[in-house]
Image 1 (cartoon, rainbow, N blue to C red):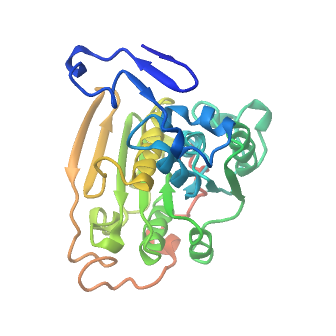
Image 2 (image 1 turned 45 degrees about the vertical axis):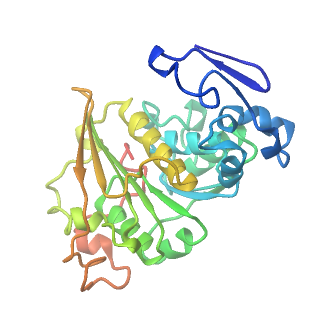
Image 3 (image 1 turned 90 degrees about the vertical axis):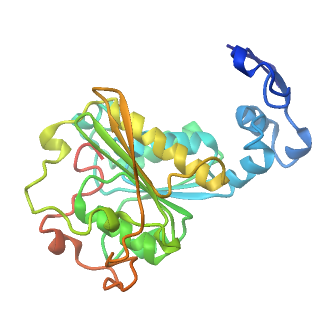
Length: 312
């Protein structure tokens, strides 16, 4: 239970925390010397960040000066975008070329009934701007492909991939690698979700290290065909935002080198260790992929827009 005032947060901590210093538990004052560049509204908005030693004024300022690109304004993109904007990430780009459909509303919380038929990036941008006016929201209503990816990715520090088709996943992985940008990857299927953070330019592995080649066309059902539990993208998308913010602030234990598997029916997590594959054609010792390719031809399947797959 927590009680708060404008400058203090009073926390009733579990008994095993009673010996911790007052600076991390109990009554924690906001260090006002770190908030001089913030408006009163910002101090109020970000108060719960400002009292966290891991964030504080310096960390919040870093977030406000950061930029993140979201691939898709669908199921995963919705919670990820909302938490990134609420946290005060200063520039949030969203690329999507789909329109809102009634079947999206079971899980895609950026959109509502009145948005059906509207471009998703427009609906998403309106929601995020209303959520936090501090955030510059860039709506990119165009196809993401080999011709556009490098230009679209370039202005952003972190790429967050919530797509649900193999051509776009490989495209995102390769473009992020060539631009030396970290890639937060999330995926969902029925009751299962996966999460990873790739920073392959630093020889820590990439999506191709896990999956060197796409599956045969038609061998894997899409979420539109197999279904997806409505709450699932909220869980995975929130973790994608969590990991992105940790990366921007350089706090905690990174997901780099780890691959997280979530099984919702059993409410269980498993973690796999991810290493760079020395034979990886993209980030290995003797790479053969040195530019973006025709991913639709390579995968043998069309690249649906990030949210066209109905569960991205």
